[in-house]
Picture: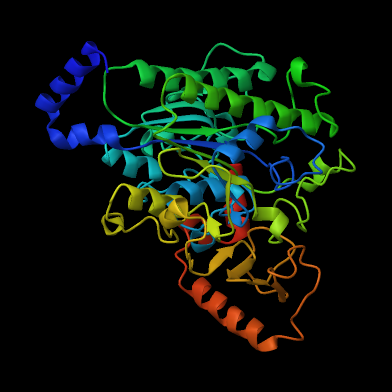
Length: 458
């Protein structure tokens, strides 16, 4: 440590006390979140992938790869809600359409960013929000103007640069306002990545001692696929594959920035996706199994809808080139970070209701991790068993049909065991119904669908 930094630290100790100084030992946390990337899109999870992903592969070699990790939902808004609140969207009824009615996260729900802010973190978000803003009278959710409220800056983030919804935008949001100068949409992904790198650089070179939380929500590979010219033709999976190559490139840039600025050892870096690959996108690249051996696609309760890549690198704590088969949901990040930081979750009663710490797994991939049963839209997972109650539409929790699978023997969900194991199916169905009966649906979700639609049109 040079003399200038020593002086800064001593001054900080005098001004803020030892508790503030202790925050310097807390890990930086960086989440890089892909949009609609499937379990089999990257070669770290699918050796037959037609898309080269050297940076994701490198991250897997440097950290821990999870093979049974799941997004909170099978669509964008639901998963982002669960990631940031630690509460399953099944519990509150959050769907993609929720964001069109206002903030999907209530002000009473404490987010991951707010919890980390309470622990002295500087909190930054780059990229796709898709959790709604307050909608002023006379405006529509897809054409908001003026000062934006109810978004990232009101849900725990100190800084926001990105979009309200999916895909590139000619007028991205910076802080609370949309920019007035139009940009080329093809360039936006690079612009956002450069800003994420700037945040990492500024953090590393500044005198303050706050740890960093960066949530970088990529726009790729969600529609529309608009890769830059340098990435065109870089895969054997068409434009979709090229867009994933571009995503991998941005991840490499973030990894490089963390490494180059001396932050690698004490930075907890997580790469994951918000749901599986979509059927429409994969139809454009025949021969490429974007969800690997998994059945189903985005917006479905089958594994291909919500079992996703998830890799964690943290040299200070996580052994490189390790693999864990622990059952993980992204809602669990809230409790895991709280566990690592010795935070009492009871102080956040309206959040982390479906969050279970897997901190022990980071120390030992073979550690016993008995996660509580996991509902993900239209499905209910308990150990090796999975019950599907609605195989058709994300968002419906009605018991339209019942299927039972043993994922330890049938990861592709090809053999419905409902007839051979009726007692197990009945057990899981009863538990699932009990979970649904205890739900606390957001007010907008309890209104008749016709009323909700008419409200959205106004």
